Length: 164
Image (tube, rainbow, N blue to C red; front, side, top):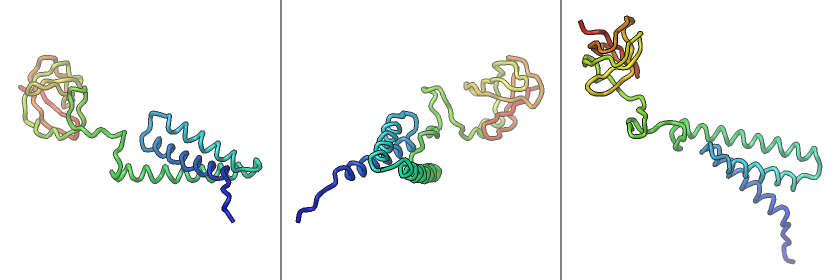
C-alpha cells in the first residue's frame, strides 16, 4: 500500500524550520530585520496551520517562544566566547581612514612631549609627536599652546602635565 503524504504537515514542518533558521540569522546578524520578520511570519503561519483551537495555538506559541529564547541564549554564548564573528565589536585596532581608533596600548606615549591644542580644563586635545590625542591634565588648567608632557597612561586615558 502506498504511503500518503499529508502535505499540510510537510508545509507546517518546512515553515517551522525556515522560520527558526531565519530568526537565528537575525539573532546572529542583527540590524537588517528582513530575516527576522520573514521568520516570524513563517512561524505564525505554521502555528495557524497546525493548531485546531485557540488553546492549542497558545500552547504552541509558548513552546516556540521558549525555543527562540534557547536559540538566543546559545547564539549569545557563542558570540561571547568568540566562536562566531560578533557584529557589534570593533575588530580593527587602527583605522583612521574610516575615522575611528579603537582602544589600543598607548603606554609608549609616557614621557613624550607635546603641545596643548585646546585649553585643558582638565580635559582637551593635545598634539603628541604629530598626532592629536584626547588628554586629561593632572587637575590643573593648561592654556592652549602650552608645552605638555605625558606623565601616565591608564587604559585609554592619557594624563599630562604642563612643562615648566
